[in-house]
Length: 273
Image (cartoon, rainbow, N blue to C red; front, side, top):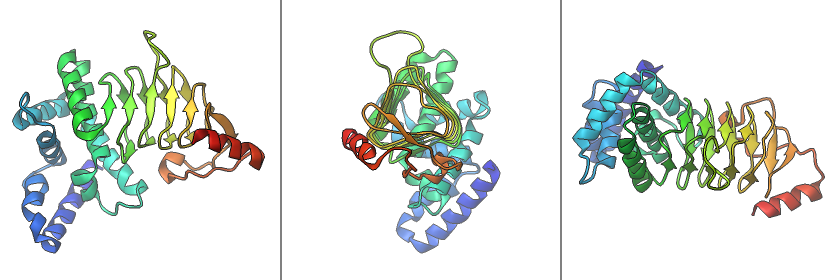
């Protein structure tokens, strides 16, 4: 997949140069002057992260080392690009994801920080976490485990705690918190299983399990386990129905088939607002 996406990215970049000459220098610098996806990604993200403490050149070196030391990282990058391209109706090519979408870019910064955390370079990993928050508005603890095919839609205000786990093919919208419930120690953050979709502004709190294919409505506060293929809405979140057998993270369908009365659903929806 990685090779195919890179070839498609180059074709899209060449077409954009012809269509919009004002962006030609930018596109050459970010894509066409590079030989592989990893090189292009590290160039783009390093230039956004760099500051007076760590230069863009040093960030690029860190990415290059991470691609070697964390051997699945680039494959996960490719799956993330494809996830956004497939799920976001406002995106019709891979190039937009790579160049412009901070949700995608922030996930890749986290992948770098997580790789460093696993190497016990925790202070550097936390510095990169801080830069990720400052530049992209996304705050993910570097210890958090994140799978592949992840989409952070819009991304602003996403917060993910230290012991959280996000499995493969998950979609999370802006303003979501995967947090704790206090100052407890140890395993204290949510586990988000395969195929889950979490709506904008939802708060998922505590060491709880959100089962495969579950859907969390926008603005909900979830403080208890959510069964697989179940929809929850409200403050606190209550089960209101089950989505279709399709993967909600992939369909991005935020509607639901309710098992409750209309009056009960309205009450929960009002509480969520």
